[in-house]
Length: 113
Image (cartoon, rainbow, N blue to C red; front, top):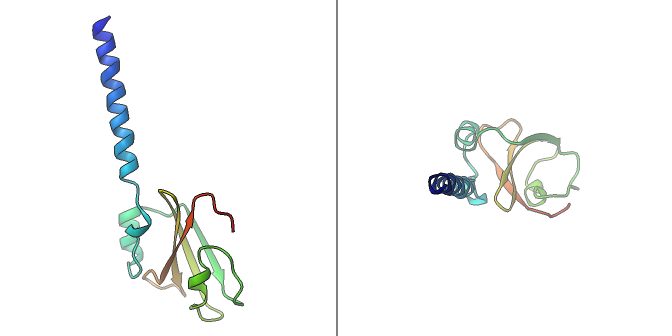
């Protein structure tokens, strides 16, 4: 019985340590950098959880992109890569098929736009 209890304790300890390490390895919003190439982003963080494309036809938009949107020229296309991070979602912005991240936004978990 003692051997079984010790084995169970070891398994639970290993699982707990694995969960802690997995959580601590998740990216933080500050880990994403404007100016990084698409390839650097993919190598560092993998594929985005969501990709969206917007065409700027006017100045009205809601969400984490609001501050960046004002700098985007009219009739430009913005590709948005979204990554789930601790505490929310990071969005990376590529304008007119740019190779590098032109801007980023952050939506805190639970915030509705």
